[in-house]
Length: 175
Image (cartoon, rainbow, N blue to C red):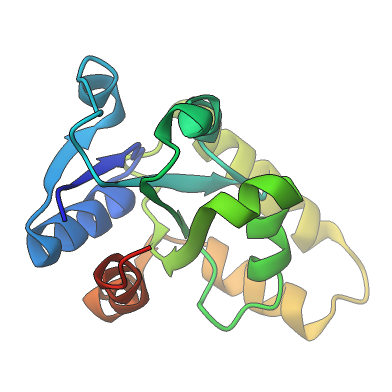
């Protein structure tokens, strides 16, 4: 199946996953800025990866605006975020990015990445620091909030190639 993997990455985690998927699937792989210049009609499967930002998938609007043009193609979206795979917020957050009709047309996956404050844009780093400050200031923190403070206090990497396996299995299943 002729496949393209398109990604939008801020700090490198989404790019890493896109490259892992493309390599394993024998697919073409392009940053979103390059993919926008290409004709995608020859591809049978289109995979889009974006990073999580406040529960939303960054630059997903580009992908969604083309879904109707891609009828008959296998459509996959993966999101890379800072939360561990076990986090209960992941599934509802992923689904909120799509309507019920869109979810009938696209397969959606999550891949844990991490945080890299050194590669973040100034605005993103500032937003993360303000969020962290807000949680730290809260009295009577829950266990989840204490864990979040620990995780968000420094850069970390929890990405792993094993999280691409469900995406690759989805690609192997013809429609």
